[in-house]
Image (cartoon, rainbow, N blue to C red; front, side):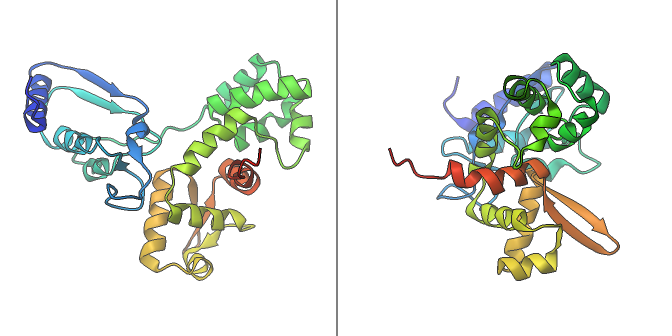
Length: 256
């Protein structure tokens, strides 16, 4: 097998044309880095760690050239190349995974033996119907609150177990400094804010702010709300809760 990357990619495409293959790349975010440093073409999502840049060529070739196979990429954030192939005429599709249906989420809480069914919807909404997050918080509620969802929700700010804070910390640390600045500013706002308000509060240039918001939206960390002719922005509830109540803790220096 040749050590030349172009030759290797050509051979791969040839095999993908000759055979019907299913190739799954899971946790693709592990080869991506936050958008800073000498190898980052942009200070936002979708940049590759040093040594992994040829994956960009791979995804570009797979998206452009005809073949008989299927690639599934699973990632917190999509590589930049993906956005070049997501129009209606392309065979490439970008799917944003959503949470469990209400019925399945309730069945999950029931199977965990949680109490206070009238409060389940509040719990499901806060954790965005994410099965992993609901499983972890369910274990916390069982261990600390005897299964009482109402008791858990009564303590403010809501407690996040270390397994959950570790997940959110990974997301937060993957952001560029500009993204951290904007999402922290958004988290401080009591309600959704417009672009004009964000420009005034952030003191960023409009290109900087617009690109940062686009990157955060593609990471699925913020929501857009349309009110009449205005577009408002807010941080997703659980991530806003983490930023306001836990980033100061996780970033606190170790004094021991």
